[in-house]
Length: 124
Image 1 (spheres, rainbow, N blue to C red):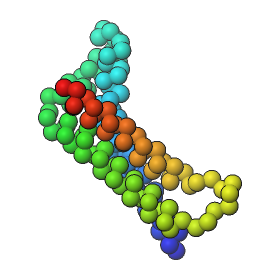
Image 2 (image 1 turned 45 degrees about the vertical axis):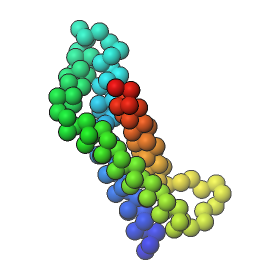
Image 3 (image 1 turned 180 degrees about the horizontal axis):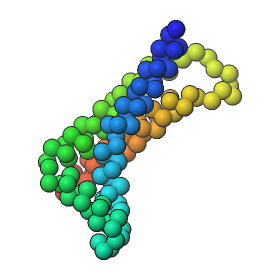
């Protein structure tokens, strides 16, 4: 029963992390795409529109680029710590559950997003 509950919790956290990190990933991808192509290309114009939308609203910078990735980082660290404490011994060649790998990946990604955003803020 406890293992089933833990697996459900990890899947829930993985889904929430995906939803919470998406706006920051969208923005950073738009920044990269918008700076790479000349503005006459449609993809570059769409990317520049996304960047302009974020930049025109100061709340987006704080909420979508700092607070949500920080929430993803905190939730991921807590979930991974909790699951490692309650993990049963698996055979040496047993793979980790996909949801756990997904939580680890989104947690690592959120740390990278936060690093990029904070370094950019410090540089300006």
